[in-house]
Image 1 (cartoon, rainbow, N blue to C red):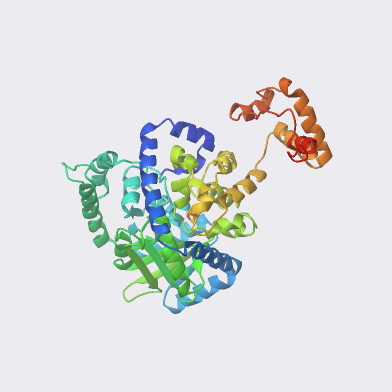
Image 2 (cartoon, rainbow, N blue to C red; image 1 turned 60 degrees about the vertical axis):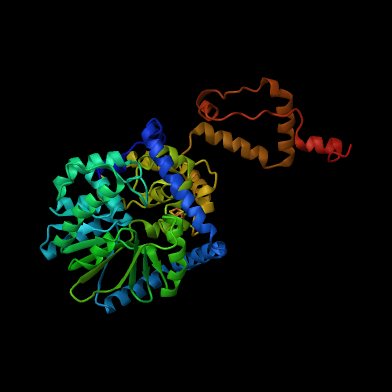
Length: 481
Ligand code: SF4
């Protein structure tokens, strides 16, 4: 992933460029519709889905309220089981810890299980600076890495690529990273998967260090859980002699039995399956393998302090909100300028970055990310579809509106809103304004002047009625006369 990822221009400019790409729009529409349909079918099978969703929300909220206590419990349990726990306040510290651990093994390469947390902190780039090569082993992440590309979806990072593009990437780049793709590689999905399987198999067998994230951590037992579909995670977690897991502190669950809820919510919301093909759990070190857990804050504690915004920390990264979002479906993931695209990215990225603990690869002036982050809460029509499908009931529209209030607004808009607030504050003022508007309606402009024209360029001003509803009600006694 390029280091310029965090310095992209504001969302509207990114999105305007993306919607011109008809191939991208076609790929996204096809993929999101397919996943959306699968999700709806398997969620519809469960009569207690609403209760499960509420349980997921309650467990997450309870954990976040008691995060300090559960984190210490987790540390104790992992240490008791022979693992080593490291605390990282920000991306730079996490990268330093991981690079140091890899260097201590004497190895110069690692295999990786798909992990949003390591993308968030720019771990691959930080390792490369220390002469360590990180090999992605998830199929979609492999496509992104070989294509020198950026992920554009939480679950399917290469969702913007179709199979003929993937064939070209494999043919041109696979040989630079290890076993090359066959000369006569076709774009048949089975042939592409087989080429990736053979390429990765050599890498698994040659690697002594693996780096993973985790979907969940259990405070009570010190167990980490990874859900995946390809089996690459299982290979990384079990074969190498050193396993390093970098996990955000919000991924905690108090007890083993809480998994019962999340192992139903996550697969159905993400891949549209009843359960994941591979569910790996491990507790501390096992015989022949050293285990390190790096607990990552990187802005999460600051997000936790915000009463409205903190619900974003309930996210289990299922990506259901992306798949239903009309803005994401047209603009694609790159427009969000973050590893977290779509509706969850629009509320999580600005909050994490606002804490000042951004990824170490961000060497751009704050204004570059500032523009982007200020625009992200507006990357939504507020239709509410994201909230409807979220398995942990994050009210994304509520957080979007909350974050919009925080961003700087033009003076003309602020004055306009202040005037509107004054009018709406008293019923008598509102009634007078409505009567005045009704009388002057023929003279009202269709387009506002000056800087306010930006508002009417993209919106229709509704027709002002000759008589307000209140006046009509008074005159007709509620329509009875
Ligand atoms: S916000 Fe909700 S729907 Fe979106 S990725 Fe997170 S858990 Fe899934």
